[in-house]
Image (cartoon, rainbow over all chains, first blue to last red; front, side, top):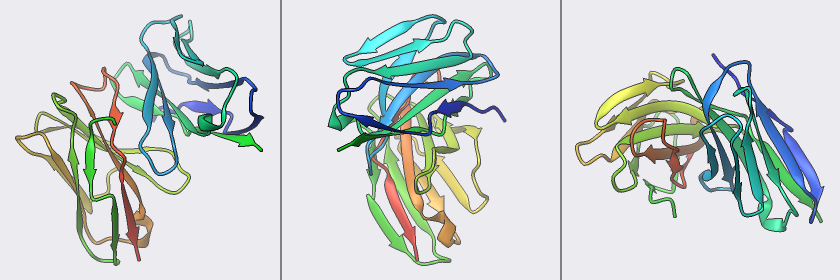
Length: 110
Length: 113
């Protein structure tokens, strides 16, 4: 089946640093979604993208729908301790199947 | 609060047993999805229901089954449980199909001993 390659798998960053993660696929997607999961909780929707080239912000978070429709990235500016968690991308393919990335685990160095 | 309610929050049972997980979707949402998340793993799609009917099937074992009732709540039944079934089980809902973003509950943590 289709796969999304989400990278990096994990990130160790200092508080205050900017963070960047991305998802790529060999197939075209119609929608990109970014979720964050805190330990022991369900994923929470951060940003939804519906058009190629679309750039959307949610506070310190910015995500873009790649122009080729095969990728998306999520940036977090000036990270804070509560940014810790696992970030998932998900893409809606042409068969209306929602494909999930494996997640990026964000850890802030003390 | 996503508006999706899952019960119970925790479940501990023995191998070979059967359990039922329950999900109430957000008000107005017609689609319900079930996902399995093993320790430190990603989300594995199990099954989707839309307005009472099965819409899509993922990697759901034959020992697992689900249904969506007329009031739109859903139940996931897991039988002949094995140690490897220990995981977090999430329910998500959306207004229609996957073209609208999913909203997740906080999951049921199943431990099989």
